[in-house]
Amino acid sequence: MNISRISIDIGDLMNKNTLALAGIFGLLAFIMALFEVPMQLGNPNLGTTPVSISAVMFAPEVSFIAGILKGIGASISSGKPYVEFAAGIGDAFMALFTFYLMRRMRGEGAIVIGQLSRYLFTASLVAFSVSMFVDNDITLFAEAWRGILPALTWSIIANSVVSVIIFRLFGKGISEWFGKRLGKGIFPQ
View 1 (cartoon, rainbow, N blue to C red):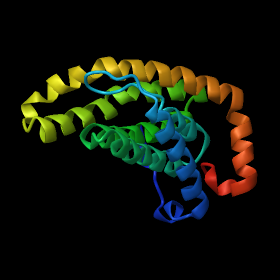
View 2 (tube, one colour; view 1 turned 90 degrees about the vertical axis):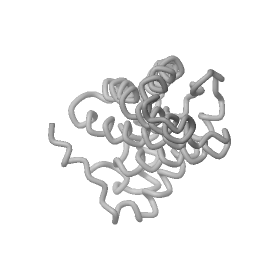
View 3 (tube, rainbow, N blue to C red; view 1 turned 90 degrees about the horizontal axis):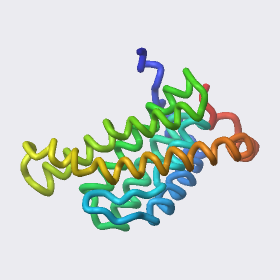
View 4 (cartoon, rainbow, N blue to C red; view 1 turned 180 degrees about the horizontal axis):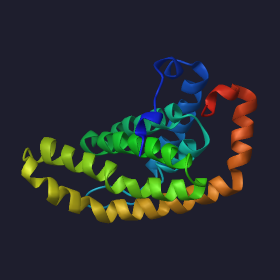
């Protein structure tokens, strides 16, 4: 597996169209993260749906930034940065992995496998953050990771289903609409 093909060009990060698109999907992710199901550790929501959709439709910078913005917004709104910002970083890595998968399979499969990668990326970063900054004991990492699984499982199921439905129904229209307004630079090269 050659991950060196996934690269984020700093020049592309500064592209106003890339930033605008990332801001739109980041805002959508933040808004969708506000509607959650409260659980003991983690709150399942649809916040990663826009991140997944942008990962299979646009350049990887868009979805990576959208994941980070989702984490920042959810941290502010929930008051739990040790969970939500770590989850946003994990979701940004999920987006890059989903983009990588998109190069090798259909969008629907990339979305579902990308969402499943949150068991590694998101759960691990949240468990690390909670065990280090809340419990002050890294030896509780495994316990924190297991504690996240119920909420994360519901989130993965919901985000996978909703993302695939939106991608199938509206994916082409969304990419054409943004392509006409922001140009071809927002698409992977």
